[in-house]
Length: 287
Image (cartoon, rainbow, N blue to C red; front, side):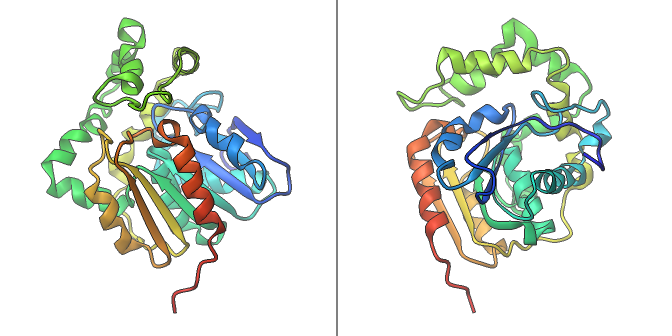
């Protein structure tokens, strides 16, 4: 890209020229988290699933300063332009959800509809964490990730046991039978994150967070859908409801009781159906 000089890797489905749907994955993931949505929405959209800065086959600048939130937001603007679009349906999960909220706040003209999966409005997140020790503990890894090199090392122990257990364990993993990650899915994740240095970029995203929050601007002005798996081990569901305060347009929240943090992989059929319904709604403007 002209500004950052970074090369971005993405996977696209659907014809060029159709409206753009841009998908932003979370941690520790990559474009592959959206495989079910790439297939589903290509009939009506140009669906683009990115590898975020530092992830997968996208370039990973070495310094943590290169992962500040404003760089990550600028990346999305650049990607839109380089794909030949000026607006999109923006979908983000987890950390990608954080970026999606911020893009919607900073560049509202670029986002026709916002869909976030299992991440509250960033202001809700920062305020809630300070008042609820239980959420502070669940977000403890944010603090752990501030340390140099050691978090990366932890992930590699026992053949990436931590990474595997995030997706497969009873406490944090994808629970629903029939939607658990297959051996091939796990291999895909392990392949990406076992490359030399592959964990540093992703963890660097967290190493700058305390310099970027809280936000100056808060309001989201486009129609917004928030999807939430109630069995999320990392995010308390109360934050989802509070998010409503910051959306000054149509806001729909759907909480799925049996679903985990990895919602769009855990319950792809339901998630896809909810997204279609939201996309097809003619939103009546609030006067």
